[in-house]
Length: 524
Image 1 (cartoon, rainbow, N blue to C red):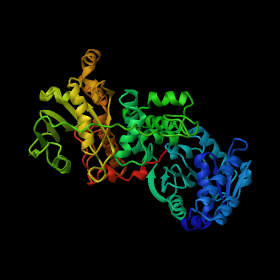
Image 2: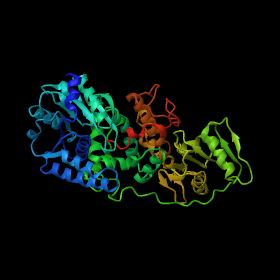
Image 3: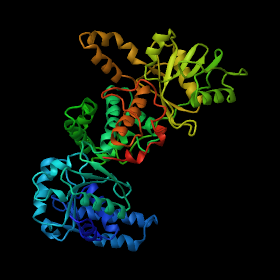
Image 4: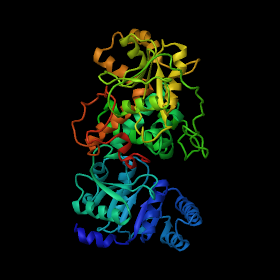
């Protein structure tokens, strides 16, 4: 297929969008706004007309806010024509499918479309994870079939994945790339691999979150607060509610099966229960949260000023240790004394009269306490945006055998340092966060006595509490990003491994806060 001929035919040419759900309606809006006549079709009777009515209300709201002109809104709506039969869109030069994530359903639709549209028309699927090569199997002209994956909400999200299957003509992919630019999008080319780029990278973001929920390590509200404090525009739980748990779960299953059961992509029992119960998120009115209320704010907690019960020593080197020393000194947190500094230290944090407030290195507070012979230990997560931004939620946990006084003092010190402390695992009656991992260790050893040592280590690693988990979420994103070409240079960790050291920077020198969050928020 000639590239120039393809682009000429797509310039303001009629577009058929099949599927009038959130994604399909968004695609229709974007195409109509730039001048394309748009046919909107859905198998459910009346769905296309309903989608246009909702779009009318959306555009009216934008006009009221002064975001667009009334004339532009009217012109956009005039270009969208709901149709009841595919034959009415025979003149379409481009078809964009946005139906259910099911291989058989998509195959059947495109085989039907081949007999409706002309031979020069390009067929595109908005699939977020199904193989483009597999969908094209059985088409008379598979070379004109391509993936055109938008992200939710379509009018706002810039990224479009242009996905080539084994038989996709290069000129077709180039035509869709150029069209995406004309629509104001940022296209990226991808091969038809499981999850393509973004959904491959995003799986660990969801998987670690859902694992924490299954372990009852934290609430959705706390997890969202911590990840937003790390630089993400939306937390993972509210993001899954936006996407729809049915869609998110289907994508995870697709990636899991396409990777031959790779354990990194195992679907979650927590999410399956939500899907089985019809708690799909915003679309059903309830998921992790109830809508339209949405994500509740974390309850405000007032911490008393910390007590300096002895000399304060700042351990470690680098930006975080430097900032700790500065705040302790300037805030008078150790009275009239000046904090001492031990740069040549194996850990980063504060020694406060023998008690330790430790920047996580992946171990639990209980493990550190047992190894170092210090009862009063608390670990806190890596503050990804600090010291540039203060007051953000920060996860912490206190060793199980720590004193009740330290259970109260640890969050008080974190609050004095400029954070909003969020306890991981379960709350201690006297304040602070209880490191349940240590309490359960004896039962766990008995339960895993016959498990192979290597598998036992992997399972124990997966049971880490909240501090350190968020670091591993970031580490998993970094590793998958490097596989997909989005995480910088460097050698990825071996398959199935988890980082045991805190993630300070990616191989390209970017902090988590500097990663391209538009690739992850919002996504499908």
